[in-house]
Length: 303
Ligand SMILES: [Zn+2]
Image 1 (tube, rainbow, N blue to C red):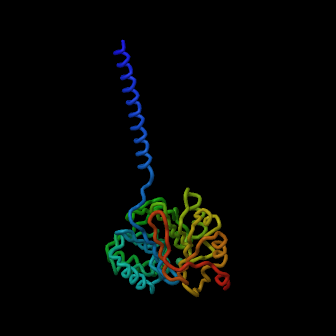
Image 2 (cartoon, protein in one colour):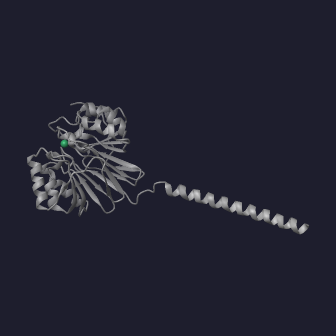
């Protein structure tokens, strides 16, 4: 009798232990699943250089072993951009992007193509040929390079980063609205590059994109009043904004209203005309800026 009770007790203990073991394994498994489902931080860092190209754009993006360049400044600035790439020890570009065929964006593209190897050239469809765009097309033909015309929504990899083409989703009569608009993601950080896209393109981007938020926004069209609508700025809600603009330019860029709009949202503003080249560094979690801090003062708002 006592023997059978002992067996029963042993069975109960064994069963309890088994249940405990199953519970522990389950718990462990759940924890593991949780860990693998969070996005791992990318390795290394990414640098985004807003190169001082006077009244024009040129932005270098560098990861551990890849590089891309968005725009190349005016014709006469091409050599400065090439020198800058050399100073950064860039030997090859994975992507060379011209946002749209105006000379303050693709003027130096032929110099860049002549100075180092390029894997892929991205441009919007060129319907309205300018002398500068013809030079670029001739250089591309000489180099046996074809143009990739990216569709809105297409995504590319550069090292551990990805970039997505947000616009143009269609052809516009206004050349500026045909600018390639690009969102770059690296871990939890993101950057939005806008070329000279104006409010019509912004409106179409807003209608299509579910998440426009970015840590760093390049203020489109050198701070022109025809871009950076209130709605667009609110949707991007950047912590930092950058205006690529030349000192004393003929266009009155950046526009005072746009400066006020940025100031009103407590966004930290950087400008190439007053600060030269501005470099952002991200580890996928935090962003640092390599230039002195610059707040808009009233002096910036007076013509
Ligand atoms: Zn421009």
